[in-house]
Length: 345
Ligand SMILES: Cc1cc2nc3c(=O)[nH]c(=O)nc-3n(C[C@H](O)[C@H](O)[C@H](O)COP(=O)(O)O)c2cc1C
Image 1 (cartoon, helix red, strand yellow):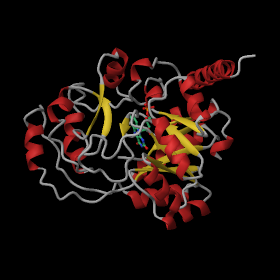
Image 2 (cartoon, protein in one colour; image 1 turned 90 degrees about the horizontal axis):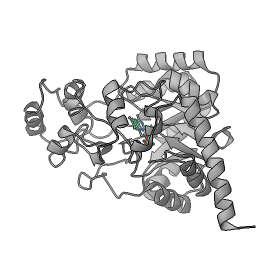
Image 3 (spheres, protein in one colour; image 1 turned 60 degrees about the vertical axis):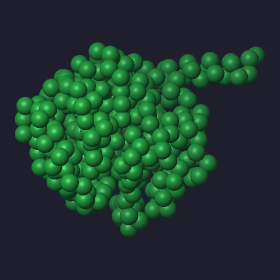
């Protein structure tokens, strides 16, 4: 179904409040594919969001799930003390949980969600089989050709190839705990090229795409669609917080990959919390996520996670359907310029 989209634009799932039924519906209305983000939400809240979405649109939409990882054996008391000293509020308990993964899987199967995507790991082949039986298209986010080969083996129908430019969490299956991105970093075009050489599946490209020319670039590089996250953060339909919107609009901060907020590499705007903890943050997700949650909830832009892709400063606030229409117009223009350049008449 992904290669039959009217417009090859996907609004990325964005957990933490940015993805909303209204955003999904508007992107669908404009011919693209919108995603709800099930990460961090209760099963009931995911069900409510799906119901709200299907009340707004009869277009296809997706739901994204976080695949749980192993419990950390790292002692996190030192990091908790450190964070406590930097914040006006008491940090949370660094507990492990599985984000209600199994129950969310049952829910999306029962609701026959058209597209189900996974990040942070692989669904097991039996679940992929059951999703297919429920009529869902299964997408797995990958960041390397090796992850792509594994995703193909479990029966994924398509892959979301995420470049290191991307805002938010990297979809890496296992954090190596050493390199800034949890593994080797590939930009979106390099990742696409390498993945295409390894697997024969429809690919959705993500990471730093902000202009229609970027959409055209990834399509000509073999993707079936472009997935944009940060470009939709500034739309009125998104649930982006006021402080996050303002930091994006200022456009003055640089971005960096960090484990400081969640214990997993993610790209966001550099603020005081990120700088102070960049070198100390343990690779322990979701324990660190729970530990910093009350601190992030203060709404202080120097303490919050301000997820953003590398091209965020080019994003201008506009309704989601206008963003999609602009991307299409720019992509057409970019392609006609490219054809003239490559084979002048
Ligand atoms: C605020 C925010 C939250 C995100 N949450 C998720 C998520 O829940 N699941 C997911 O697969 N990707 C998530 N991502 C990553 C996107 O899927 C996508 O890879 C990324 O936004 C692409 O880069 P861009 O932001 O430069 O467009 C998130 C990105 C942002 C900016």
